[in-house]
Picture 1 (cartoon, rainbow, N blue to C red):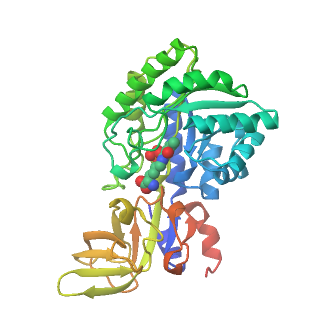
Picture 2 (cartoon, helix red, strand yellow):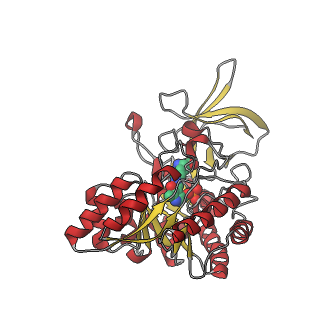
Picture 3 (cartoon, helix red, strand yellow):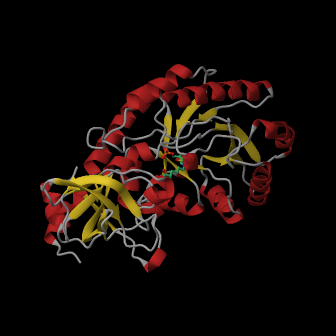
Length: 393
Ligand code: LLP
């Protein structure tokens, strides 16, 4: 939520900027934890969704572990207090240096994605005199019915071990004396709102746990990844995702042998609704065909609409005038630098502040320098007092 007090501060901030509602993040975490503790499962926050220090610190304080996809993400998580024994490391392309670093840090587990990666981890572990805990990322060939570009669990996607790769794994793994098999990892995609996809995932996961068990690979840890979607159309009404429904779907679809620890990797569902990208209207332009609101944030600050045709709700924080229909565009030299087509907004004027909602996940982390544009600074709702007393830039 953007309060009146926040809005007063906004007038003095250099735009565009990210603004995070830390109270909402805190509440989201506590609702998530209520569910998690009920089932005794473990969660590793997907750092890739947002790795701002204050956000990582709050998530760490809430007791979650971290799911990282690069050595730098592991470093960022550790710097903000995450215990390496609660860190998992995924990704199809781990470098030798990253593997070495993760082994030295003593992370909980490598989520491995190929045979070659397993061999490399094994030889680096052997050189360091360490044993690497590894889980196998399985590609279950499930269509999560989400955006094509954020679907990860079909066999045409680059992620994980497909069924066809498993015989070679069963043959190779006993030779890897510096790897300890701990279990299986899945992640079928992101922004999933159809619970049926999670049901299918659980069924597939349970079947694999059985198959691995029969082959002498005891699964002690089953990681089902992240993926729960949020409401981009109506973020005010659904600031906190329906965790109850999600957890209940998973619980009711799992049937596992005694002693298997379940792990989850939420990213978007934790942070998306807490973040806004706030931008100022530079110009209004009516070209006779369309009416454009040209703002000072661009696709370089929030690439989701350009990259995935993602829709983010936009609010005009400065105007209560009658609504008009606009295309909201940025200053970058690309036609796809567009935040919304036919957005209905209170009449916009030069200098108005617009808030692009649900920008807490995959927003700031995906910023880029194109057109030599600046990165947006971040501000936090729990520091408004500080901002009030400091005259900012
Ligand atoms: N675990 C793994 C292994 C992942 O690859 C991801 C996200 C997650 C967990 C967290 O998923 P979440 O709960 O956030 O859905 N940039 C895209 C999303 C890419 C997601 C990549 N993997 C977007 O803006 O929609």
